[in-house]
Length: 148
Figure 1 (cartoon, helix red, strand yellow):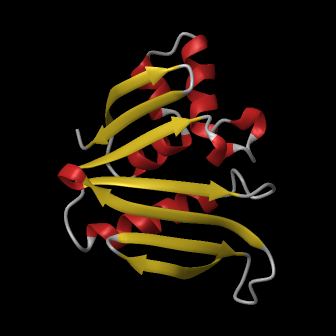
Figure 2 (figure 1 turned 135 degrees about the horizontal axis):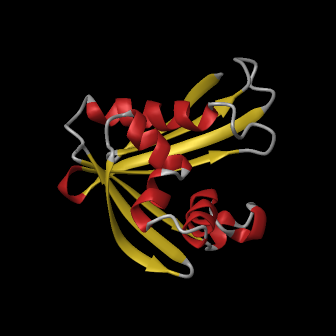
């Protein structure tokens, strides 16, 4: 996987990911920034055909690594929704929101469901295994992962 740094300004970072350095096949993108109280906020997109291949975590990790070298990251915030940003996804909702809804309907607690979304699994890999659910609506879920 080849990552190209597209933007690095105003404490924001944006990468595009390709199959190799010839940049013939785009496989995803990642952006991130540090919010209030040292919160890492990311948007990771993995394009069709490349999901479940490790690309998502690699993109997430690169953003995490970049910002953790600048300052300690206290929490990782996930805001999952079904707004126009996710129109390319099945049902128009983020993968995280879809997984969260499925798991809570399968009798997982809100916290268990959050930790079993893609973002939850990635946060856990980095030691952020404590979760606080901040907002739950039909069209949005916001959670905060911290080190336990």
